[in-house]
Length: 175
Image (cartoon, rainbow, N blue to C red; front, top):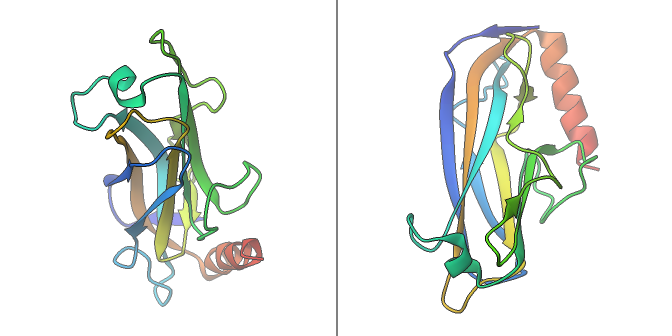
């Protein structure tokens, strides 16, 4: 299906949420990696999430100020906000539930998303951007949550049929 053109590399982006219960957005530009003419796509192997406070070393209980949950998603189409798990544009998602007693859980949405280790394993993206969305249900006054998204990927060449199939699926998901 795919011929790998590069070794695995990591794309990283940080989303800073400064207002509780407000979706915050960022993008990762893939224009340098995806080429329609050469049937070149980005193969995503895994997506990892790191949640940090206002500063890199700040404790979450200081940042959140109480019980809260933090949600984050990566999609290959701009939906304008968080989407349901069955949306074809969804690449990865996370949810961290944190209580004021200091317990954290990711049971509601297990992450990191790992697509396997084989050469054909992974999520193929032919769009020119990844769209990131994050929100936190609570924040202490003057604080912010930083959600760092790490996308482990490689560049691949696809056959004409495979590239077309992925492009059609992506277009169909846009409706």
